[in-house]
Amino acid sequence: RKEVEQDPGPFNVPEGATVAFNCTYSNSASQSFFWYRQDCRKEPKLLMSVYSSGNEDGRFTAQLNRASQYISLLIRDSKLSDSATYLCVVNLISGNTPLVFGKGTRLSVIA
Amino acid sequence: ETGVTQSPTHLIKTRGQQVTLRCSSQSGHNTVSWYQQALGQGPQFIFQYYREEENGRGNFPPRFSGLQFPNYSSELNVNALELDDSALYLCASSRDNQETQYFGPGTRLLVL
Image (cartoon, rainbow over all chains, first blue to last red; front, top):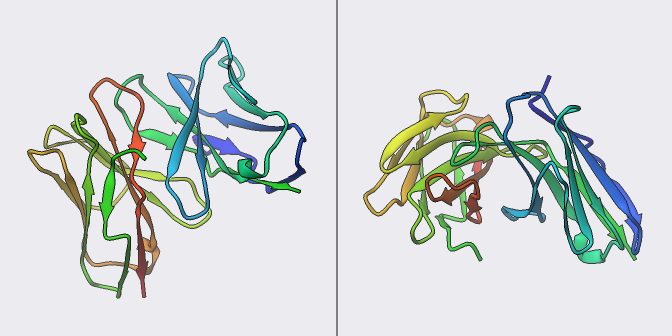
């Protein structure tokens, strides 16, 4: 079983749609969780950290369920500029340790 | 921008050759991590350098090696290149005990 699993997509959605991405992780000792965004042929950029209490940043909402080892990202009112690959990322130990990435889920928002 | 730079941006090599990739970390950061991202995959951890010492290594063979310099910049060296080494090589800098890693733009390596 892979350490971090994501549905690879692609998700093709119209502008204005709501889209949800899911991710599961295998190591129950994982401490920190993130969503990164990666545009085509660019480096990954931190979109948001994910906390057990859930967190929201504008149109983006992230949730963590430790019991199910499940992470989600919800994007509301999709924009064309949201088209990218979304990477689910886990850190085994809090602090400065290697990140474990999923393969990413590709999103295309269509006009 | 993150302030992390990498060179070169693109590189073409042939099998068996050696390559050196470079990374300059963000000001104030003392940790550099290297990742390999093959096409269609997420980045895979190669190794990490903290204050000039290797501080963890992923599942990569010894022909992948690295260095970190006193100014915290870093090099990734790959010997005896194989076709499967073709990938985007990313470095990320961070400060000790901080989770956020800032990625450079990457070096795209093609091995023919």
